[in-house]
Length: 246
Image (cartoon, rainbow, N blue to C red):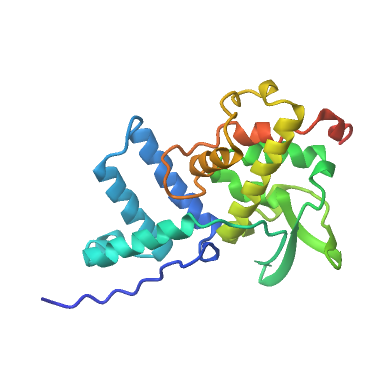
């Protein structure tokens, strides 16, 4: 029996996975969902595991079949664990843009978001394929900083930095998505959940809601319901008084 030598670069934390990689993974999952509308099959799950190795570990599909089964299972389990790991909100981080490290910061006050920012965010945050553009709305270069306070670059267009945001690590992405989920729940409660479409069933405990939300939006591996649908649209519906002018 010949020895198999294959170098694996397995992510050990969310910061090891980029948004671009996760978008590739979610594209695979979306196609699986489309082909298996009622339930997943053993064959589809096996295919997903192979794609996980390819996307997150850089292993060619043909090489994956050469892995010992115990190694294969161990790697998949580790990736699952990484994707299920909770992520705190990160308000500022360094990102390389045109060969230079720049510090980006989250919009300091979400209630002072401009109408243009809101419209773009509303459009991009509902689909993983455009999530890099949503991140480019939420985070922009920091111009001035004093202690924990900072001023970010004025918004022009998501296109300005969206390509760079494909390299954003997933701990930052998951962190801000969960932050908006929790913000949305507070807003929903303050104006009445019954007034929001598709939130009738949201009368359970917040912990159960959050678990369902994370599974639905791919923040965790145990899901095949992948569409963001209109959830963020509703969660980000701030009172009209916040958008009196552009």
